[in-house]
Structures are given as C-alpha cells and as structure tokens.
Length: 194
Image 1 (cartoon, rainbow, N blue to C red):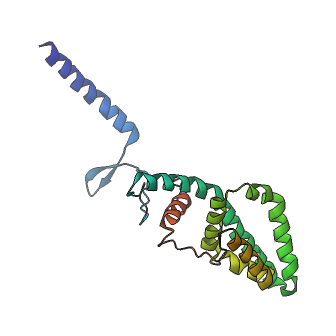
Image 2: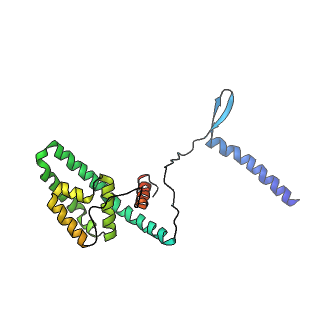
Image 3: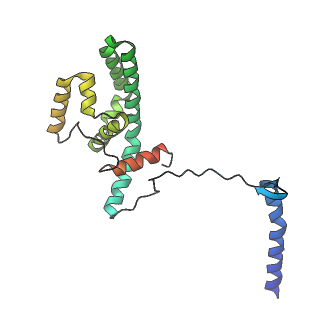
C-alpha cells in the first residue's frame, strides 16, 4: 500500500513539474488551427567519410592512429602556414616578377626567425609528416617547392641529402590511399572534431 502511494505521489509530482519546465523552454505556434510546439535543436553536421574512430584490425594499428593524431595536431599548423606563406610569396611575385628572390628570402627569414627553433625540435617522423601535409596543402611536393623557389641544383642537393638519411622530398600525399589515416585526422581537425 505504501509503495502505491509513493508511486502516485511520484507521478503527480512529475505531472506538476513537467508543464512548468516545458512552458519555459518551448514556444508554441498556431499553424492552420493546430498548436504546434517549436523547439530549437542544435545543428548537426554530417561529414561524409568521417567516423568518430575508424575500425582497426589490431591494437597496434589503433596505437599508431593515436600517435599519428598527436603528430598531425602538432605539425598541421606549420603546413597551413607554409601554404599561406607560399600564396603570399606568389602574390608578391605576381605584382613584381623581378622581386622573386627578394620575396622568397623575406618569407624564409620570417619563417626561420619565428618558427626555426620549433621546427628543429620535430622528430624525424613528424618531419616526414610535415612534408606530406605541405604537399596536401599546396599541391606540390617539397622537392617541387624547393626546385621552384631555390632552383634545380639546390633541390637535387637537398633530395640527395634526404636520400642519404633514408627519406625523400618527392613524397606524394595520397589522402585516399596509403595516407588515409592522416586524411581522416586532418579532416577531423578542420571540422573541429578533434
């Protein structure tokens, strides 16, 4: 008997509280003679191809994805900056074609002064990742950028040095191929998911 009274009191309390709470949060409109509640819901953005966490075949692949996420979050701003500076340099060269060397040296000085020490602290893996992300952002491999901005001799010299250490400046970014994890992480960063 006591449980029945508690249950009735609980139901009665809910019925009393609910209209007060709803009246404050809900608006009503009359549409064709019907009263319709109007509730503002937060926007939902659906991004094709992005999942919260991709499915991994093994624990090792999951660990690799998490490490890659940390690295991409660290170097992606530098790739964006490189893309922005390249556009600025191109704009200056278009205004005054004779100023190509001067524009490149100015950009290089600014980058070295502001980010030189931070870039020197990157690990080898983070450096490779930065080269791939620069390719993604600009559409040019690092080799092509060096060749355009510094000349073929310097580009070949830097490529030879990179090969000596087991790397390449000619790496192409393949967002829908072997670099799918990087693309997934970058898109999540761009959409503010991570």
